[in-house]
Image 1 (cartoon, rainbow, N blue to C red):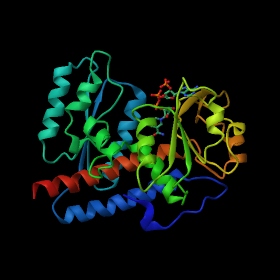
Image 2: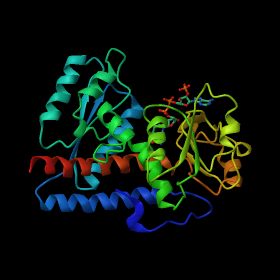
Image 3: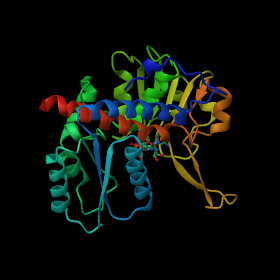
Image 4: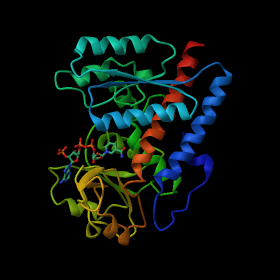
Length: 305
Ligand code: NDP
């Protein structure tokens, strides 16, 4: 799924609009699903939810709803937090063997008694639409296109490309080195064809601002509310804020509000383009998951036929 077919989007008021792009991706996926239907394939995503973490339940619910909205089969397999490792692995095995399931996702975090890495490694790589299996991590790093890249960094790259951001030769600074965002983001940005010069910063980085101030593209995924301020940004830089942090806000009925890792108002003053929170990267993640699931269905069929 590439943005090239649509032509560049123009940023209004410097805003990179994740909601707009997510709708565009979803409509492309719906079209792909219709084409697969004509070949007798209904893409299916199975999400395994362990325990009753409210945030995880919200994410999983919206994944299932979006699948159905796009004509795919979406199912959530709910299990108690007391499930054993062996029982959870047996569910993954069953989904691995089920030909009507094209994408498998085990919602993280899992309870402490379960080895999350072992669960991720058990998922068939060609059904691992989250892109966390070591085979897919390796494929991303060496540039093999038939693997799955994690959804959030893929969504970020899609945003940059959709808004016509020049990545070739650009200095791209990423804050965060997690396996979910920072590291795969770096792998995507350095690939031939994207061609950025990448710096990855983390909590042991000395003088963070020295790095951020020379970034043409600054991608922040640190999980620290509003830690990047306008004075840390090079004038004209493109700023992508992956962070999602709930902070207290007495003016809201819930008593909290969602903010990113970037102090939006001061950053927008200096940036040429910026993603808002909410309405930015967060919207892209589920859209990319749908795109990965449709592709998994198309690829699995190709292998079988
Ligand atoms: P992690 O906590 O796994 O990783 C955070 C990274 O930021 C670590 O590498 C850490 O360094 C680094 N870091 C933390 N503080 C600093 C600091 N002061 N200076 C420099 N580096 C720092 O988080 P994730 O990668 O999972 O998520 C990052 C953020 O993105 C979170 O807010 C999360 O909610 C959000 N997110 C949003 C998604 C979306 O769909 N929009 C999806 C996934 C995540 P070190 O390794 O040294 O500890």
